[in-house]
Image (cartoon, rainbow, N blue to C red; front, side):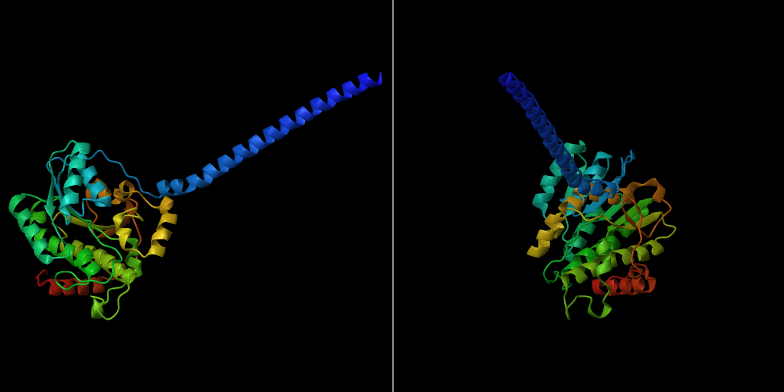
Amino acid sequence: NRDGICRREGTAGGLLTRTKRRELKELRLNQHTLLNENCSFVLSVPLLFRNFFCGQWSSTARLDDKTVIITGANTGIGKETARDLAKRGAHVIMACRDMAKAEVAKKEIIEDSGNENVVTSKLDLSDTKSVREFAELINKEEKQVNILINNAGIMMCPYSKTADGFEMQFGVNHLGHFLLTYLLIDLIRRSAPARIVNVASLAHSWGSIRLDDINSEKSYDTAKAYGQSKLANILFTRSLAKRLQGTGVTVYSLHPGVVQSELWRNLSTPMQMAVKVFRPFTKTSVQGAQTSIYCAIAPELERESGGYYSDCAPARCTRAATDDEMAQKLWELSCQMLGIPWD
């Protein structure tokens, strides 16, 4: 009858409706899953990018009975470099300006590495008196220095001068390390085979060596001044390598990568915001330390000297960074400014 037919049709319609609802639910679920997968992929791209280009390097090399000096070792890549080399058994000297932070970092490194042979020592690269006092202490107390890592630095700070009247970035990043290396070079040579590692930066491309205004007194641009100091690191490395040929002491400069560190503290507010946006693409301090560690201990670099490295491999630098004539002029000017005779 008609009622029966209606009931049967209603039942069929109900089944059809439930089927459609189930299909729509599955479709929404699939769309949601796909969206999650796409979001996960998009969010993972920065991590994949960072890990792919981070230049991770591993080695079981030991540094027992070796002495290492690392400037600026209380934070960032300097701290992670100190941690790694301490785990390898080295006698690590953390040369730092802020001794309170240095002591905290030392305690952490000792606990993590199980190596009690980690010490701190005061070094303010913005004051040549402090540099000389530190070097005098090292020459007096240490029998050898097998690895010197000139790591400390400042970046894009407001204009100021060091205790000796040098533009702050050039004074700390270049002249401070130039003087320190000069004062320790005899001990380092007696410790051969030995290595000197200068932490430079890709930012060397931002600047040029302004021989007529090395202290940026005529005009000051924070980025260009930083670039000048990093370019000086690379040119210093090239000149020093030539002077140390045949001594068993090799020299390297490097770009650690764009690293999440305290170096960014002097950036303007807009720049700070930009850094936060690109933070997923930057390296951690552990990743940033890898090329420093590589240059300090990689056996394949024993016969290499004077080169520039990035991501644990040889890297290209600007033409200005390979200008040996400018490197010589910078060397002579540095000696003149510091009042030292280093031929």
